[in-house]
Image (cartoon, rainbow, N blue to C red; front, side, top):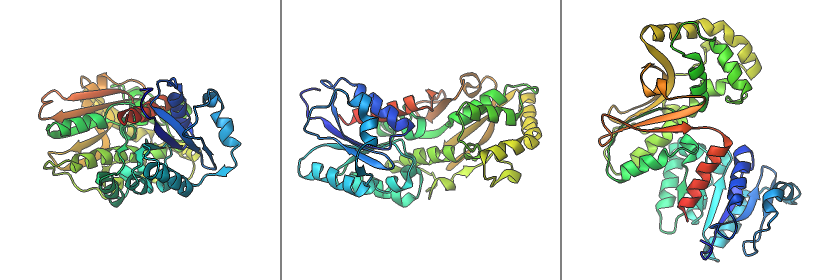
Length: 375
């Protein structure tokens, strides 16, 4: 790799995942790294690095202080102009890594791709939001000279979910159904709550502990509404529909088009703070306990799952019951994800991808893994 011209990497977003990604990127010994970091952009500042200079040995330990002391403001327009020049005039290969969860940054993907700038991201917004943005991304990427987009970590963090799906489709397999526990938060909650007996912990207590452990968003309703799962299902559904195979899947205008059964009690909709939400959630413990009791009587457990039913033409997310012998009951621990691919080739035994589906380290690994695909 040392003899190859390095790929130039510009990073937008240096939060939890962004910082871990930068650490992993700079941990590749410079003589062997196929990448050269040329730009870091936070919400306030930008740090530019000379693409022709050797990487500074102290960059790994000092990039945060160098960024915070930079006099350059965060300016995505200027960044776009710089990267475009590198591609068009200097004939460089450039990768823009978006580690934000910003709609505004996601909206720029077609612009970057049209200029030949590759885009790698864990940001779900562009791929699960308005369908027109998704179509624009596909169209600009497919043009001659267009950049590639890679988004493995939008669905399973570091798990090979999107790459597995694309390989199945690309080799001519037909997807019958994809089903899985896609949310690390929901996985933890129902691993703890749905133990298969009637005397388990209260639902509100499990959610409170999940929040204390950092598994939920500051406002747990942002997890319990199922939107995160709906976004991931939208991404998978759109990938399936983008392949030239017959599919009866509906065209999802956005993730809001997914049939999503929220776990937020109607009386708690719109509660402004997470603290108030948790304070009022115990009043609804009985209804969740009843669901657990009914499942237990059937020899089943509760799991919040997402389903892309290609054969049935449906995309849905919600609470479902599974036998205690099912992999969704026996194989999950902590905040693991598990995804089953039911296909013509993998039938009746599905292909299963399982493992940690959340956390900065594995998410950043998924992002770096996408960069390596561009080498």
